[in-house]
Image 1 (tube, rainbow, N blue to C red):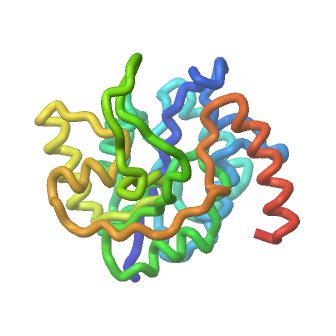
Image 2: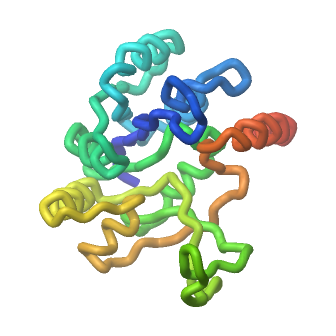
Image 3: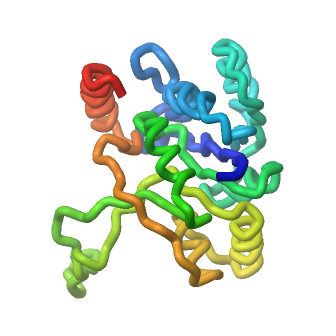
Length: 228
């Protein structure tokens, strides 16, 4: 099963939410979004450290909140990058273990079971994904072509990877000037190796837009009823 570092991305600045603070500080049931994630990760014995890339001006605030909740897993806040990719790269550089899990602070509905399914998967590289239930076309102001929905995947986090290989792929991407929106596509670009896809959950939403806050409250109430 191995031992893991977990990089918890906390670099968002809340532009789409129209906020004056990073959206990971938004409250859900009285707690910041990232605290909901940390509470679950803290119970995973194979996760030996958590690295949180944050905006430099919010590191102190993040550390104050972490200390308030008394987590037992060591947590390191590091300065994030200007892009998601740069933040992952910085998090990987601070990681001490051979395996790494990548997750986002604004996905608070990930469950312990989700993490364990990922960890217990025999392949060292694995992600969660969902089928796309709607039609997708290629184009901008005009339609330029069709895409085969059955060949597409809605990528969810968390992901897990061999930490050294993912770090190498990030180094290559930085040298090549390539930018990726998540790590499975980056890793695949350089290694072309197997990345196992596990069935994701419709509850595991990323809170990005104002409407997501309404959805989050509804999901939270339902998950409490379900005991998850």
